[in-house]
Image (cartoon, rainbow, N blue to C red):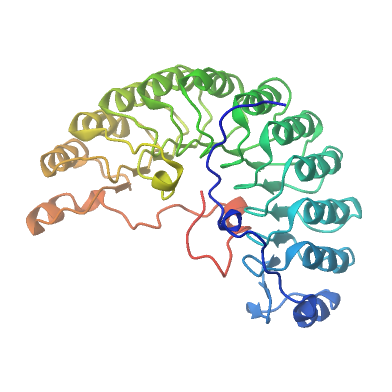
Length: 392
């Protein structure tokens, strides 16, 4: 087992000595509806939980605990309507993870399991991974903000070597360490060709871990989205990742928000992505968990903004780029407007809104809505009625 400094786990449940769970009888109205094996025409709210028309069972932040997870999954074993199980921030722990694993083993219809922030440790991750290794129906596994550690990550890696169905793997802020990361990247580089979306934010990745990511980007043509926000990659890590990007032609989304990048790091990324035929989304902005995780924001300034603008102008499909909170001055924004002003293709480039009215009008075409990320089916499947922020 890997040892070393503990990293911050950004989950509110870690601040509660003993989580207070609801009386499972409060779930009875929801359970009765689920036994009917149907979906509502509009989102249906219960004392605990909600069911949506598109097949989401939303129990995020409902304090159901391990026992609640057990009774809910028991009913779902006989339900064919629910496809997305959202159990975020419920303190279900390893016992709850085992209940979800049993549901999957019993042939439930659930295709997406959102289990973020649940105090699931290595044993829970291992139990889920053992089940998913032979499963062909689950397409999304979301484990963000659970302390699964290196051992849990190795279990996930072993699962990925065998699984051929999962499209989305979320290991955000899961304390997997360098060894755990290496195992996951190795599985995705050498064996797995079905994962499309990979989330590795908040793992305190340093430049030393960047080579594995670069190798993955260079060799895996199935990956469509890689998010690395709130890490410690810096300019050196960005330069290494850029080497992998220069050999990639299939990635559609890249996230490097809050990684301590300066104009040098931005220039490395821009050079590697110039002319990239598939990239539609680039996030170099600011991650909400930057402060609590103790990482550094990006400061690409005007020089970096120019490099990114020139890259955008040369890219056929890149339409969304987040550059907020990068210390781009009004002069830098004007320069971006001059570079991109003649480009009539639709773009959504997020900048800090300028205060000057005339300047705002001049570069208005560069400032898109804050909730600019299109919701792919994989993202739409985990949207919660109890959570207002878009996850990525």
